[in-house]
Image (cartoon, rainbow, N blue to C red; front, side):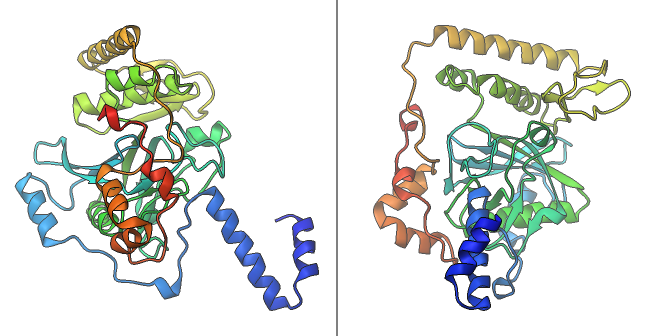
Amino acid sequence: MTDFLFRRLRGTISSPAALAARLAAVAVAGALLSGCLAMDYDSLAKVEPKLSSKVAAEMSRKGMKPESPVLVRIFKQESELEVWKMDKSGNYALFKTYPMCRWSGKLGPKTKSGDRQAPEGFYHVSAGMLNPNSQYYVSFNLGYPNRLESALGYSGEALMVHGACSSAGCYAMTDQGVGEIYAIVKAALKGGQERFQVQAYPFRMSAQNMALHRDDRNMSFWRTLKEGYDTFAFTKKQPKVSVCGGRYVFNTEFEGGEPTDPLAPCPPVAAQPAAELTARMQTERLKIDAAIADATSSPISAYVDGGMHPSFRALLEQQGPKRMAAKVSGTKYPVSRPEAALADPYASTR
């Protein structure tokens, strides 16, 4: 807070207690602009969600264990979050897809505080980043900005996956949805996984979707994200993520170990991805080039401010924002910008 603002507040508020209250309110407002608050409040203490017998039984049917490693994928355009679990084969398999109630901003990465952008990229979440007393029920912090984003000068904090249906740069999953997700990832971390990977994408990275957004200024960045997307899709193993040359690099070993400067040129390569994987990824790149060259449709209008899964959009239309907010969350947070949530420029593409 600037000295100017402090003097203005001090000059207009008579008592120290009132001044402290106003300063706290200003601090909260600033945090809301930079991300989604996830502060601890004693009054919000609650029983941490546990893995239900129903979820455990579903895992068992799919050859998974509660303590087995987990991986999360997020897709903005589709407003979906996927939870993947390692099964008895040692590979990851899709456990469940969760509809997302609200995300904010537009397609594209988050670059600065207050832009309302939900992050896109590769993140790693450890046990210390889980918050059982989040003001949005429970949450986990994505760790934005990551090493690459910090090196690029991106700013922002407290970017979460949380409950309710309100977003200022976060991914809101409703209380029920985030409670189940929270219990799943906590069981994996408690079972020995040091941290789990979160892959956040603008959309499902098909050649058709890439062509649909061919004129977007983020296309170069999205082509890099697709490399990680394809690496996981083809191997069903968590990709090793390095950062150098100002970009993500996947499943590559470098001479001298991991690059330490995300913006410096990548060191000489000691071991590349398997030849079969490299060939399949090259085929995907050619598919994108062909799809873009053949595209004739007009560009689609961008989101006004984020999106919402069609199932929640229908609920919003039927019940209105107040009744819907009460239905999806026990907190008092309203559906953020409901008019924008009802606007879905990509409905015709689903």
